[in-house]
Amino acid sequence: MKEEGIELIKDGKRLDGRGFDELRPIKIEVGVLKRADGSCYFEMGDNKVIAAVYGPREMHPRHAQDAKMAVLKYRYNMAPFSVEDRKRPGPDRRSVEISKISREALEPVILKEYYPKTEIDVYVEILQSDAGTRTAGINAASVALADAGIPMRDLVSSVAVGKIDGEVVLDLNAVEDNNGEADMPIAMIVRRNVITSLQMDGRMTKDEFKKGLKLAMNACRQIYELQRTALIERYSEM
Amino acid sequence: MGRVKKMERGDKIVLPGDFLGTSEEFIPGTGVYDQGGNLYASYIGEVSIGNNRVINVIPRVETPPTIEEGDVVIGQVMDIKDNVAIVSIGCVKGKESREVAAPSQGIIHISNVRNGYVTELQQEFGYLDVVKAKVIDAKTLRLSTKAKDLGVIKAICMKCKHDLKRKGNVLTCERCKRVETRKLSEDYGKGLI
Image (tube, rainbow over all chains, first blue to last red; front, side, top):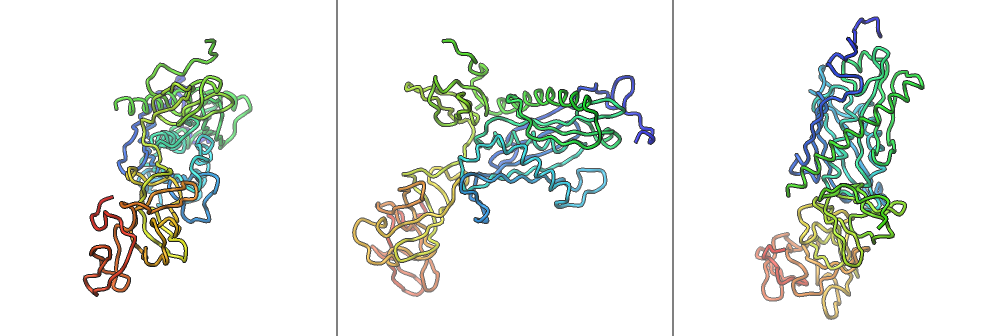
């Protein structure tokens, strides 16, 4: 991919001026939707994501109910205007996969057995995309679930690392993602040091992987603190 | 005294996953879960420790409403069998703002309709009646209408589907002059929950 001639790193800085271990600026707003039980607006650089949580509520169809616990449903959806070329609306192979992976990233923290025979709906809408939307979606959904008052073991934080121009860097943007060598989104329960989701696209050596994982885990800690402050800010004023 | 881990943060409010204490110190109450002998908060709220060492998180968020024994529910009669009426529960009194986090199909047994003997359930309920009932068993969702304020609060004529008006202890249809009987709530036709 280097033959395209895009130089992603100049003088030890990335194209947008960030260092290798720097996150994009993050903005979190809690409780933005009036009709949802819980919601969150999340910005990570040029990613703009909104998450809405409904339920737990009675599950339909009834044969899909779980007699012992709630069923978590997660929908990741990109708005047609979220990317440069219009995205054809509706679920496709990519968004179905991301929905599944995100659901599995959040499932371990939800105390589902408190609400048998119900479903919890999480809707994540990508309003603007600049690489790493699935991680932004997980961050938003985690805050929205807490806002909905759903009993949880902890919050989930998520970030991606990747490899560009042979360097392991944190939180790729779209240019870096398209011209880089590897991309690895992870989601974790920060205080438990538990990774709930890890994917990798591209190639990294064992050492690069280890370095990237460390980078991502530290960044998750930072994101966790931001999620925490956003929730405390929202609920301490009352 | 020698607490290994200090209660997490000095903040007034706790978030899901915040460490509250150990199971040797406290009895976990609402909003608290136990993992490996440690107690953590499960939703956003304030910590309160009762005098009997029960630790609770008093929610700052709106938590999902559940149906408890003694709750008054509003529902619609979906089916009437020989001995039971099946009620689809729409909301719980006092928790109307959010959908109930439980299955919605409740049951009124013929023995729980009113004080006194009921010969025929058809005489007490009609299809699509709106009823107010009390939960007597939250697990199996068994309901009772054995009180003055409980029973049918809105009904339609079996023949012409017109709204029924209360006339003394019976209901009459203004359109076809049909007379029907019900286990009436004292709030019938008032639109009060």
